[in-house]
Length: 359
Image (tube, rainbow, N blue to C red; front, side, top):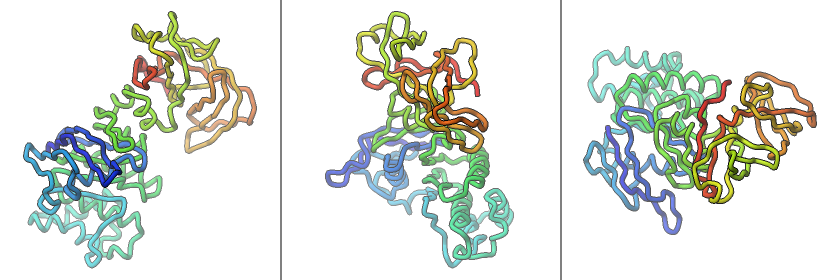
């Protein structure tokens, strides 16, 4: 399905849930709606599904105006954070229900295939009430996948699952989406999830659509500081700077050999954006040194996050592996100028990294 949103707006009294936006989804691809809680993701999905009619604008499905057409008249599959299953039907019958409506052959085989991919094979004869919340969510996912709807909307479907299972299911879903014919919209608050799913990403913030495009392009070239903040975990380090004839200066004695567009020097203050993964503790060719002191060190999974007080301000570095630091100890972080973003006084992107940091 090609879904096109034209000047969609959603208001309730004086409160604006969605500011006017245009969005055309790439057919048969995954589009991730990325943004913090209350960014407008669920509101936008409800408009896409036909659960809510927009205050203004049009929704076009394959060129036909379906604005205001109720969801029961659309071929849409939707999975919420709050799972919905048929309570009086077994897990197997829940998954099989859309297959039976289409009178498909080999229903049992298809049910078993989906149950295996979503790790719910042992529960096929049980009722939903006999399952945990995470298991019930997987049943809802399996039923949505079985429906093979041309438009599939998934509103943070893995949020209630434990970390290990969430990682496994992301891989499974990516393969299932790639093999399917559905246009998929997947809402999440996690930048890492958007990168893992690939496809396209629409970044939202406070009811505004900030940027839409191929996921890697949006990640590497965020058009504004707002996009960069939304698409960074941990948050991108933002450092005040000014333009000079030689490049960009972050502090009286910390210069970066970065070429900024003509006129940037007279446009006001600049901001240098440094992703935590671009900072490291071993010097490489072309690096500049940022001496400082350790303020905090956090071990998270296989990474260590180091907060350091440096001449350009507090920086957070994401180091691969488990590292032990003492609070207050001296540390030197290294940064390659080719790995920074530069934003103008309005917060819009001037310079994107010309090379990607090595892990």
